[in-house]
Image (tube, rainbow, N blue to C red):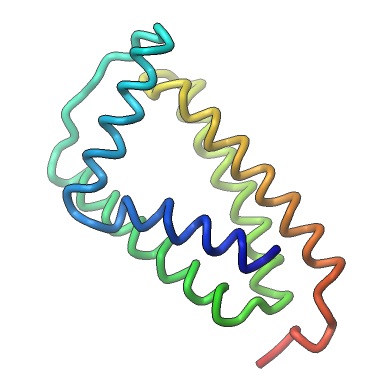
Length: 131
């Protein structure tokens, strides 16, 4: 389960890590927003915002690769906590306004991922605690 979550994250954050793909991801989210009739105003992201998206994506890819290579208990636990923090940040951004409610789907995937990681912790052997 820990590696499956890392594989999902690798794909999802990989889209943010590659310049040009992050714009396509945002465009796709805004198209879903429009199709659902949510009418969130689309904005053009400035270069600095795209840089931070790429930076976050690169860090997400690195974190996913580390968890794929070493699904240790501490990393799985940290991932579960991190997923809750990310879900809270996304939820806060949506509630504050200006961010498409389509991102509630990401909140759901983060919370499901946190639950899956907690479940994985119960089934990981204690020997995977350290290198």
